[in-house]
Length: 95
Image (cartoon, rainbow, N blue to C red):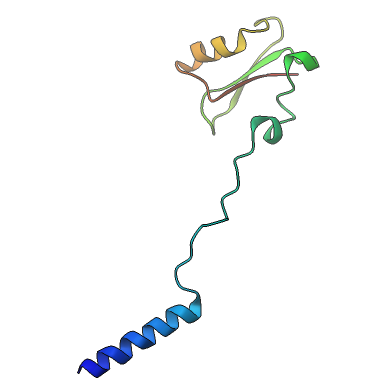
């Protein structure tokens, strides 16, 4: 009886070793791209001529765009916090 258990354990161990065992996610994590690289077409920056404040309340939520002249330089972050009711996920200046 103990011999059957031993052989079954060895067989299962051999199959696991042959299949590679348990997979780990080591080395597969990629760094999250920054806003500058992932959404470069939207966020250009005030110095580059963009004059429209863009606010995103959550990471996967839609962007809200405010027309030029409604908000002035330096007010985008504060207006986004007021609109979202908390610190927005992202704010930037766009065209």
